[in-house]
Amino acid sequence: MNSSNLWSLRLGFSGKQAHEIEQNGIVDFLKKSFKSKFDTILPTFLESGPRTLEEFKNLRKEIKNADSVEQKKILRKQLYGTVEMKNWWLAKMHNDSYPLREKMVCFWHNHFVSTAQKVKGNYWIYQHNMILRENAFGNFKDLTKKIIKSNAMVRYLDNVDNKSGNYNENLSRELLELFTLGLGNYSEDDIKNGARALAGLGLGEENAVYRHFFEDNQDKNYLGKTGNFKADDLVDIIFNQQNAPYLITRKILKWFIYDNPTEELVHYYGDYFRKMKFEIEPLLLKIFTEEFAKPSAGSKIKNPLEFIFQVVDELQIDDFKPLTAGFFAKQQGMDLFNQVNVKGWDGGNSWLTSQIYLQRNNTTDLLISGKTINRKEIKMGETEMNEELNQVEIQKIKVALDFDNTGNNKKIISQLTNRLLFKVDEAMQKDMENILKYDFNPTDENANFAVLRLYSYVAKTPEYQLI
Image (cartoon, rainbow, N blue to C red; front, side, top):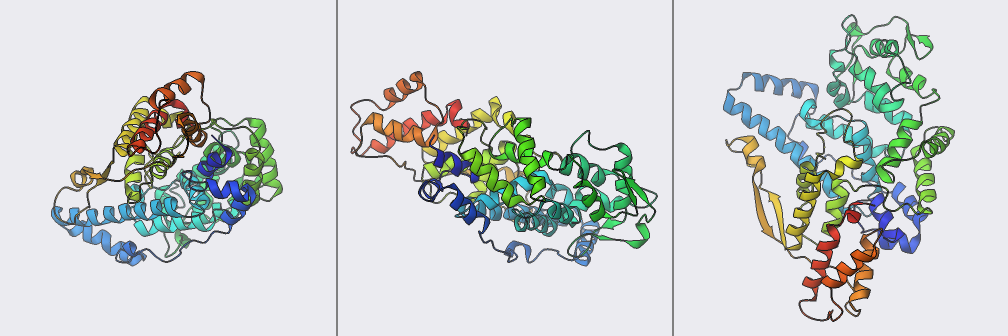
């Protein structure tokens, strides 16, 4: 796989940006990505839903007082909003000229997990998603402060139930274990005192706010410091710890480049991150430019979105609905806005179980044959919500591959493998030459079908699953 295609996949979701990376270089592409604009206008699907605390309170009353039929209608409308939000985000991932921002939003989405299923407020989930987008290349410490004071996070990690004298430690624990320092770098007493500092931090209009009657205003001992700490104070103390940079640099390396980064590399970039005062943009610039110069292809298994969007773009499917990618990703265990738990998707080998591999092969065959699976539109009638969502329909689509119609079989095989595979051995080369034989005529009217058969073979190889 040539470097421009490899890094188009790593910095986005397909090979669409390969030409620009090759023409202008990785540094130029990164700088344009960091400066990329994004829409801050509230999506239309959220306009009719609750946004204020009073509106959410009234909705809960409405659900409580409604009969079973009306309750299902209300819940179906909420679920429809979540589906629309997935579609909105997936379209950004697939259509943005510089998709690194959305790739980074997805990274943060899986780091600061907050699921729609538990939060039960699409506007709060949208706010959470926008915080990630606005701060995707900003400062990690500032982002952490904003996230733990988001309505979505205090609700997801039950800090709405954290009150002086009746503490809930969930947010305090995950702030240390999953968001910043990692296991082994704090004590149970730090968790307890962190919970005391977070007591009373609950739902607000645009972000979480402290409720005076539920606060704990006594001194707390936290990571070796003593004082009447609140949320921002905890984060400031955490980011002064020696191990503060390493958890996140390890996760960034795993998300983009290596399923198993070396500790040497983690500490090398982590130390630079600390030196840059936890600014994300210079960290990414250093990681990507330095790793770009190394022969690192084949070091990471594609996640479901990288896989499906690459297939769709290779097959030049113009009318592909973004939500179909979401449906595929959910089947593969990557359900946007609904990770299985607060740890998020594991990535790595979990993206290539035998079942997932089979699903990838079957989906590729379906698309190559000119068909796609789309979920039916969710109607607002009285049918069962889950049954409605599980219905699918087969649609015909037009597919074609980009190949050199002036070349012979070996030239076309080389063109395709350079674009798609990090390694081709002798046996694989022979198999491909048996599919696209020496007398292949690239100008024949059925030439595209023959090259599609070759692509079908390539897409089912273990090597194709890697970038």
